[in-house]
Each structure stands twice: as C-alpha cells, then as structure tokens.
Length: 295
Image (cartoon, rainbow, N blue to C red; front, side, top):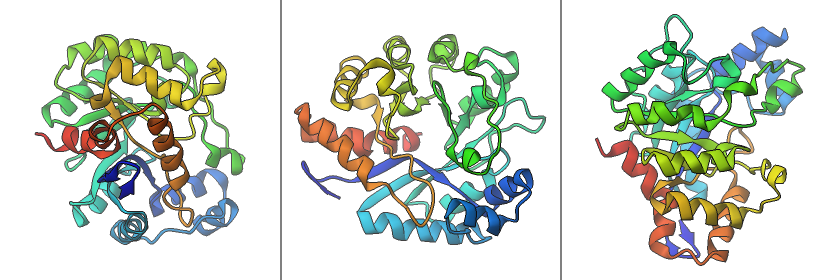
C-alpha cells in the first residue's frame, strides 16, 4: 500500500470473520433465521463455504492494497472457518479463533496461529488453573494467545436485543503478568491498547517482553483518561517500542468491509509523532508477519 512513508506492506492484525456459523449462532439466540439476523444488522449473509467468504475478503483487501490479515472466528467452536479460510489463501490470511478454555472440548485446533480468549465474556480469570492446559497447548504448537482485556461491548448483540452479561472483574491486563512470565515463548496480544486499561497494559508490556499491543478499533476508551491517539501511540512506543505494536482495524461485516478510516487515523497519528518509515513498516505489518511466521 502507498502510505506517507512510501510503499508499505500492510498486515491487519484484527479482522472478525463472521461466518455462516456465526450467523446461525446468533439466530438460535434471537429466535430469527440467519437471513433475518443479516437483515436486522444490515449485513450480507455470508456463503455457507468459508473459503468463499475468504475469497470475498481477498477482493476487499486487494481493493485497499492490504497484503495480509488475521481473521478471527468470533464464536467458540468456529475454528474450522478461519482455518479453512487461511488454508485456501495461505499467503493472505492467518487463522485466529475465539476459544472458551472452560469448555469441555477447548483445544488449540491445528492450523490456528492464535487462540483468542475473552475472560470477561466467558467468566474466568487468566489465573484460573483451567486455562493452563490451553496455554500449554499454545506453547507446544507455537501459537500466539490473544487476550481481550478492558471494556468489552458487542454491538451486534445490542442490535438484536440480546444480553451481554460480561464480568469486568476479569478484564485487568495485570492478570496476565505471571501467565506471560510462565510462558516466555508465547506471544501474548492485547487488543485495543488494553481497551481502557492502558496504564496496566503498559505495565504488563514493560515487565513482559512477550506481550504485544494491538492498535485496533476506534479506541473510544480514550475518553476515560482524556487521551488522544497520538498520545496513546507515543506512550506505547516509549514503553513497548515499535517492534511490539501490531496495527489492526477491527474490521468485520460485509458490505462495509475493511475500515480504511481506522487506518487513516492511525497513520496520521504516527506521522504527527514523526515516526520514521522503518518503524512505521514494523507497526503496519512486519511485526505481525514476524511473530506469526518466525517458527
């Protein structure tokens, strides 16, 4: 992609892959048919075949000049969708998937490059002994671990009138401190700069060199601390450095597609700080490719 720093291969660390199975799960909870869920959300109903949805995302990324992306299966048990998508376009996608470690069948599926944990959503602490087997599997399979901390809101559920009984007691990034130290070879990814626990996310990154911060979303949590995006980037760069920031958009639904506006705002913030081309290339893509393909 052509950027303020010239040609820059961009890799997005955070795209939700809303498969047909995702729509079917929402339909079961809302009493609607999958097509009714799509109509209510004003989204396209995806094809049954996840590789066809992957093909659509290739076209979307091509239209913006985005080289690669991490696709997140956004309900537990849907690992096969992103694994199939990544296998169909191995030069374009990394397979991520939400996993609930309290589930009887929780495992790191073959083909995943990251398991995504949502402690507040599923009601557990990262210190819970039941999480450890999944972390050990991730370490053995050289798989990253994405942990959603901070504020968690799911607009889809609100639009469908579904409850979101999340428990923020389990949202503090500092719960990962001993976990990250215990698994030094695992790359831990915190999305949205910690989503409201920015100070704690910085502490964790300072103490644990295997912790990475994902820059995705509008980062509306900034209003809690009176911060702006250039300040957030500056402080994150001061603590974690340019090699541990992962650009992401939090793009999701079609037909909206890839959220270029997020890219534009973030690159403008980096330019405001005077970030040079080499560091910009690390943040915008090289870091993600390195940590997911270095093994």
